[in-house]
Length: 396
Ligand SMILES: [Ca+2]
Ligand SMILES: [Ca+2]
Image (tube, rainbow, N blue to C red):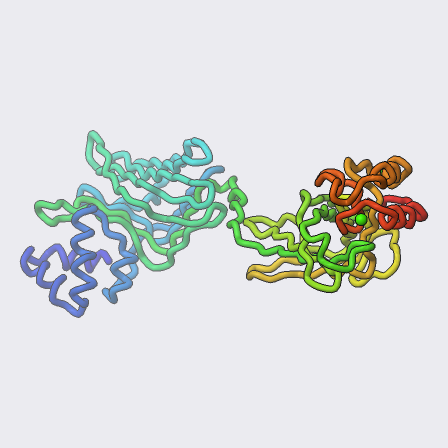
C-alpha cells in the first residue's frame, strides 16, 4: 500500500485523475467513490479493495490497546503524518485510556512519543443500546505544536456486545482538496475493535404481530327449542387452574342458528394474545337468567368437575375455533339481578307474575322471569325453575 501510495503520488495530477477514471475500474463504481473521498476527506480502503484494486500488505506494528470500555487490535498499524511514519512500537510507555462516559458514549485514547513528537489516536464511540459505532477518529498531525486531524463519519459499526472485524487492509486518508496531496493517514489490517465491552444489548421490544383468536361457542337454553331466545346475552369465562388464568367476557349476544342451537363468536383479534395458547382450560357459560354451566370438554353431555381440557389456540391468519357446548343446555334459575344462585327468591319473581296476562308483561318482567322466552310468565317457567332447583348449584 505504501508503494502504491508513493507511486500514485509521484504522478502528475492530471495523470492521476486519468489513472483513476480510466483504468480497469468501472467508471460508474469508481467515480462516486472518488468524489466521496474528496468530499469527506476520508477514504476507507475496504471500499477500494472491493473495486478490485491491488491491496499490497503494508508494513506496520501489531497493536492491542485495551481498557475496560473498549479495545483496538490490529496488525500492520501505522500512522503517516507530516511526512513521517508512526508505528507505535516504541520502548517508552504508551498511554491507553478510555473516557468511561456513559452507555451511549465512550472513547479509546492512545498517546505515545515517536519521531520526537507526541502522537495520539483517539477513537470516539457511540451506542444506541442496540448497536455501537465510531462517529469520529482523531490523530495528531505530527508537528510541534500538535494539532488534531479529524476523520469524521460512521465507522466500525457492530451490534452491542460484538466486535467489529476487518481482515483486509483498511484505514483513513485525509487529502488536501486543493492539492490532492495526502495530509495524513491511518493504516491497519486484521482489525478487531469493540466498544462498550461491559454492556450487553437491551432486550428489543417485540415487534407487534397480529393474532387472531376467534372463538365460536354453540350452546342451547333449556326449555327453548326455537329462535325465541335470539339476542339473549351470555358471559363466557376462561379459567386455567394450572396457570391461574381467569378472565371473562362482558355480556355477548347469541344468535339462533337452527334447532334451538345458539351461537356467539368472541373475537379477540389484536396485536397481542388475550388468552395464552394452551390446553387445560375450563369454560363457563353464564346466561342472563341462568345458572353458570361448567364445561370441561367438547360435546360434553354430563356435569363435570375439576379442570377442563379445552385447548385454546391462536393463528396469524383469520380463523375460527369452535366450541360445541350444546350437549348441556344452560339451565335458567338465577334471575336478574343475578346473585350466583337459584333459590326461592328467584322462584318468587316468577310466581309473582303468574296472574299477569302475557300482553300485560313489561319488557323488564319478561327479561326477568320468562325463562323459556315464549313471551309469557306461566307454569312452564315455574317448571323450568323447579327443575333447576333440584340441582341448585351455580357452577361459575
Ligand atoms: Ca338468584
Ligand atoms: Ca315463558
